[in-house]
Image (tube, rainbow, N blue to C red; front, top):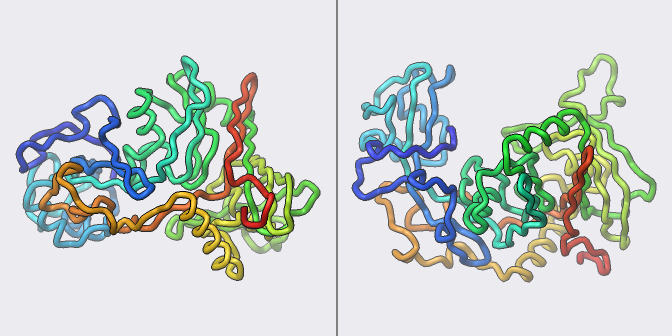
Length: 385
């Protein structure tokens, strides 16, 4: 469903409810609750919008939601259709209603966003047409999926009154580092043209398992992303036979060892292309995965490294269990139809995130260059530091 709020008071059957879109700002300072070492968002009312596609056509409205959006039980969708919180073309329909192609579907709900780490979104440089920040790990760049206010764009709007903003590149949610954001559409287009023209050079640092080779290493291996699994695999085109079709898209990354202590290595990563999880899967391909990467660590080191990373993370942040949160009416009002209330965290997001040891340090193009300081984990004084 399209992540879009709509100010439509007739889409609800509950009095005194205000949709978040009544304000031109994406977020306000008072929208956040800090608890247990994480930044939470006060639950709020929101309306999602979608249009019936070919795959959905011919399904009942309840079957559509139960099949496509499995995060809530079927009984919830039956109730929301009957109450009018789910509508078709602005009208309340029966649970047996069969949807037709291109019809507009709206879903009004009490929205709970997943929490993120409490690290500040540090502004590195602010100019009239561009702002650069150091993005903390765990925070998405812009509204997507379950996240809207708990994003870099949302936090900058709430805490620095910056908006509208136009991110010109993205970093995976668990990756930290330099993020360049245009403040005008014209500046965003300027960056876009350089990126599409292959004129932009990118630099990251990663902390990996083992002693990385001293000489520069170039990995030229296709990246095949599996959306259902949420991970990528790499395949070397040159090693495949003529009769075997190589999967994925061409991808190339240059690696240079910065330092090693015999247990870990700090590696400079320069991606030539920009595929999903490219640096992470190419490092795995070399036999030196990122040392706390839950997706791409090899099996024999997975348990050891994950335990080490969790111990470090918990020791630094003094995190508490989400179950320690006690509901307070001062934080938010309970919605009787919400499947998450009275909990603050939505179902499926109870685990604590860890900062991936991958950090963007520099982007440069024709006539410009922006940098970000190294993170605290970029030290090899002691093993597991």
